[in-house]
Length: 406
Figure 1 (tube, one colour):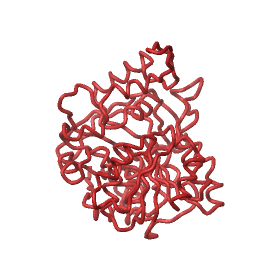
Figure 2 (cartoon, helix red, strand yellow; figure 1 turned 45 degrees about the vertical axis):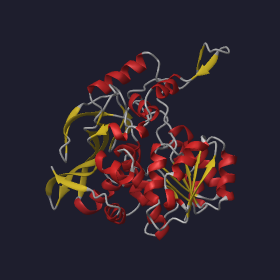
Figure 3 (tube, rainbow, N blue to C red; figure 1 turned 90 degrees about the vertical axis):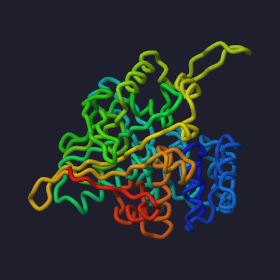
Figure 4 (cartoon, one colour; figure 1 turned 180 degrees about the vertical axis):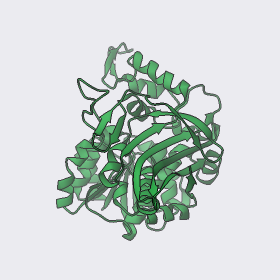
């Protein structure tokens, strides 16, 4: 398998370190708009980097990306950029005849009149609109294949197939007890993406009603996370699982709730109040005259790069899927989860826990595609594939998952 990895940030760098240990990979081209980042990701692999090379690419330039795929004979494009670049990379992969994988789907747009009641353009809609084209070409786009979405969706498939006869509710629940020395506010993941998903209207799915929206941070609940993390308040957040799971897994209700914490929620609300969550450029004075800048990009530039926080970070992060339903006529409730300790991920891979947990899942998926354990055509989510091979291979990578009866 020859892979073009676009994006050499925290997650992209973690992908290279995980993939370098696996034999299925023939070549991984690590490409980034900043060639220094791509070169650093490859150089850090040392002797293990003989199957890797670095390139510069503009992820928004479809022709340039397609040409890079062709030049290196890559049969897969793995997108590790932020969601702004999903569609150009998605289209570039199709034009080049390559398989496509991402960890976040095409962006949503709120309903213009009723944003907190009705969906406008949903996450992934632009990709699913092209599903027939991919299927007719016999090509595969595996979308939402990170940790959340991604592993959480695999858990939903496993629960529906192996643990339940009927599924009443699926709720993805994400929480952590991570702290960062020296910072009062230091997100452990891309603040650009975090603002996007947290301040957009959250989507909920109900059988008979379909998809609908609520206000940001709605329906707070306290969820008790395993392995010592403990109780964390979780709130509704827009996320791809709610748009993916109902397409392949039968459930009466699907939600996504994120354990943000009160301080984080208040900070996001303040950014929104001040207009600092906006992506549209505003004009500000500069030393050489007026400059157009995106407020959200400014916020991201003012905060530390999450990939650099590992040495200062302590604690664990947990991604998981809570499922309620029946088995053999009796009610059942389980939480399927994956916990990563930052101390372990830093010692083993030199990557902080959140980016490593995100990165391991697309590498597992690539290996399953390379061996033929997973195959398909069209635009498919992780739920469209058998869960067992994925969960077995994740354990073989040295990062086992768990299950708790509720």
